[in-house]
Length: 268
Image (cartoon, rainbow, N blue to C red; front, top):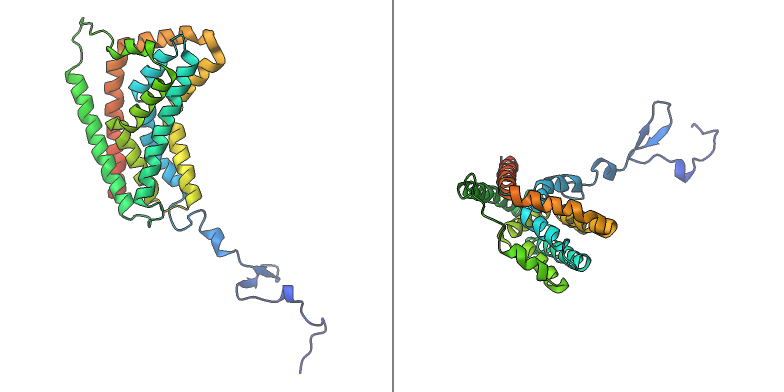
């Protein structure tokens, strides 16, 4: 009978079923299984979900109406208050609608389940709606040499209060059909990712932050620059007045094509 001259093997050095010899002859512990699944946690990685949200967030961020509204507000005597109020309402509406849809759809649903498929269908429908709106804007655009003038609601911005500015921001994000549909699609996309609660929260925050970024940048620029930012804002308002129709048509068409391509890619 053989005996080991080295004495008994300590408990922490004993071989476990998950261990095997390393190239140097020693026993190496196998990597835990969780290291091989990344951050999936039963669903898609949060980065992939956020990547899918980028086109949706860009549609909201580049929407001309809230940008025009906040620029006009920042040129009023109560610029700081009404600008901040509009930003709060705009952000709350985006986050609120997205969160409600996520909770209703079920953030813990299986990846690739009904929520994911519905989100792709909503993206296709939204892309088609944007293309229709772009075509409608193109057909109704002012003729060369025709001056349609700014919309009537631009003049009403001068009399807006902080509370009304917040309500307008909430209305444009939560009740405006285009923004509402985009937020619904975002909520369904997050729900379809089957992420843990913390990653669902991060996805909502990321989408909301990108979607509200253009309005936030303008409000923060005014807060930092004060009266010095008034001249660039006035020039920007003039550019919007002259090119708002063309910019709107271009953005609607571009984002419509992007959403249709993304929706088709997810369904195929």
